[in-house]
Amino acid sequence: MGMWNEVVSMFLNTLTPKFYVALTGTSSLISGLILIFEWWYFRKYGTSFIEQVSVSHLRPLLGGVDNSSPTNSNSSNGDADSNRQSVSECKVWRNPLNLFRGAEYNRYTWVTGREPLTYYDMNLSAQDHQTFFTCDSDHLRPADAIMQKAWRERNPQARISAAHESLELEDCATASILLAEEEATTIVEAEKLFKQALKTGEGCYRRSQQLQHHGAQYEAQHRRDTNVLVYIKRRLAMCSRKLGRTREAVKMLRDLMKEFPLLSMFNIHENLLESLLELQNYADVQAVLAKYDDISLPKSATICYTAALLKARAVSDKFSPEAASRRGLSTAEMNAVEAIHRAVEFNPHVPKYLLEMKSLILPPEHILKRGDSEAIAYAFFHLQHWKRVEGALNLLHCTWEGTFRMIPYPLEKGHLFYPYPICTETADRELLPSKRRSGFNCVCVFHEVSVYPKKELPFFILFTAGLCSFTAMLALLTHQFPELMGVFAKAFLSTLFAPLNFIMEKVESILPSSLWHQLTRI
Image (cartoon, rainbow, N blue to C red; front, side, top):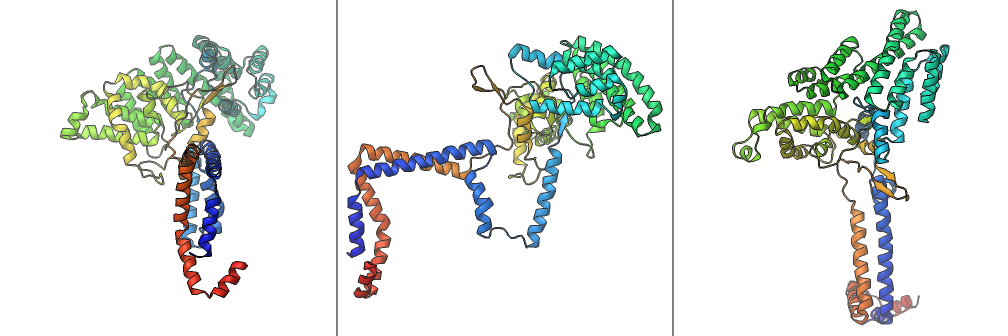
């Protein structure tokens, strides 16, 4: 054997078992640290740090991106269009059925010690109040000027004090609204304050209606008075619904929709649908759906799942998965299943709440369409309606997971709707109280945000986990059996270097011995 083999043999013979223990232990430690960092980064940002660095920095260096080709230009335009669509779908909406902050949210806090609303959610509500309940001419009336400042207050007690101060000067509809929402501890008290606000609000609305064409200032004032009046009447209808006067609530909501047919952005029809379902007036529910479940109108979980409930109601009482597998689905059953698949594609988070596979929390004041927040808001009010229809939940349980076999994966395109937006998780984590702190400063899970599609562990996390486990096992075996593992290590290294030894022998046989001697000296 040549000189190279002698060098390799001398090197292997000088290695002691302690060296192998140190080598494998250090490798296990380093791979363990990489694993911990990768897992933390994945949990926080939803992607692998190593993969992100590879795609962002190494791929351009290796020539993986060609911006000059027209194909890439077209694809980038398509990506921009899809991104714009995702942004529009990730718009946060006011929850049509949001609870009363004083009579419901605060009572929950008093009983459980948990805060059901996040700061982000309450901040959005403050922005809504300033948009709907204020205008540029508020400074002309002292009461409205006080309320303009009150809506910007972060401290609830400061807002309530300002509302009382405003009412001492004169009757103010927005002041009564604030007290009904935040100070009233029962729905009965809130209803009384809303009736007081209605009397004042109707007077302001009639006066501004006569002056709305006299200038931009009067037009803005009329728009504000319209928003105030619609808000009051809607909340009064919700009070009637919560106090058991459902027929009265339905009449109030119908009258409100007739009086203000253009204010569809308030989604008053969702309040009407819920009240009609409570009355089990399914014919009227179908009539409302026929008007609002239109291709030109924005969808919601309430629209899609209510349509599915009506289709399921026709067949659910006699549905049997065993019988259906033998004879196949009838036309009515196929329509019901397709309606369920359509609803699940729109919002895949809802079924787990309806089937009570996931616990409910109080719905937030704002929701993200197709997100977990919308699913909670829908299930919180509509679970009872699904339970009331015999067999509906059983049909949902048997069929909802079949939706995902029809949706392309990855979600580059949808089946009946646009591709599921990737921004819902981030927005839902801001809207929903995912964590809370206890008295001992430990973080306890309050609500685990539902994520769709489920994130698969990146390759590098699995790779580093396997590498860490393998090197840790080698370190343990080397420490316990140093002589035996030393023999195995030398045999492994000898096998590893065998091809190199073969190449070096061939080089020795080809090159002159004098030249090879000079190279080895160098």
